Amino acid sequence: MEPLTTPNPEIFSKALGLTYKDSNSNGKIRIFVEAGADFEAEDDVDQVLHGRFTCPRLPSPIRISAVYAKCTRGERLVLWDKMRDITQVTEGMPCIIGGGDFNTILSTRDRAGSVTNRQEEMIDFAEAIEDCRLPDPIFDGSDYTWAKNGLLERLDIVLVSEMSTRLFDAIRVTNLPRVASDHRPILVRCRMTNNHESGRAFQFQNMWVRHEGFAELVQEDWTVPTEAEGLLNLKIKLSRIKKTFKRWNKEVFENIHANLRNCEENIALAQTEFEENPSPRNRMEINKQIAEYILLLKMEEDFWRQKVALRWLEEEEKNTRFYQSWVK
View 1: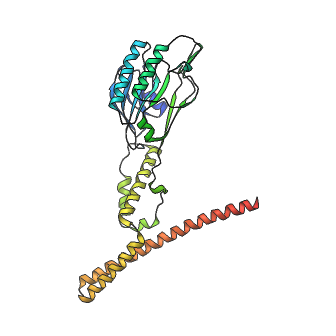
View 2 (view 1 turned 90 degrees about the vertical axis):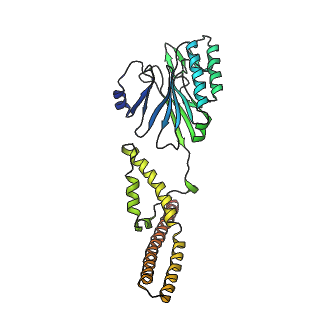
């Protein structure tokens, strides 16, 4: 966020529904984040605020540099060198630079309403981007982000590193309409990579609730704080407990049918040992194995009942579509 005055961050926090985190040394750049996210400044100068952004929905932190460039070419040379330093330090990490006012254009296509020669400034900017290896992604919306007295320019640009393109399936930049400023806000949307294990959707197994440790597992996982609020808090907890269930199912249940076969073998072994030595301890072991076997049978029954019900729903849906098409 680039303020023209010295605003009260609390007012903007309430208006945006975001938490104020930090500003650069001269107060020209301010950072706000959603609940649960964080921004930790790592480099702070007049024209750029660079830091580490973390969010529960991201698998790893990303580096973000917010820019508010000076108005003269000589002053911007300092910014280009700082960008080179930042990208050298963050090499191999996801990094996004921009979203602010670079106060210069990248090509003649980024300007309308004036024929002023800005060739040297464009070369400086282009060389800095090339040195930093930060491509300018395709954007939608207006071709120009700034307008004043008939002059139109694209001064607000977002640059992304190659690692950012690997972290996300897609990065989309949109130049939004101007409302209360001569600059257009820039919206950057990043779509996360779909990493579902073996491509299967998560499915809750009814047999899990029969396990003696199920309630404790849910309680322990659900009570761990997320540092978020509202629907984001709920979303994070649901995503987290889904991973917990998958891991727990693999470690505890494995294959329910194989567990039954193993339990049958254990019962037969316990009965043989009791016949050889009819002690109370061996009798207790038989009863223990039989109790576990009955529990596994009920779990298997839950498994098949749920599987048959889902299959019936799929068939019912197919039949419904068939009859609807036949009626049409």
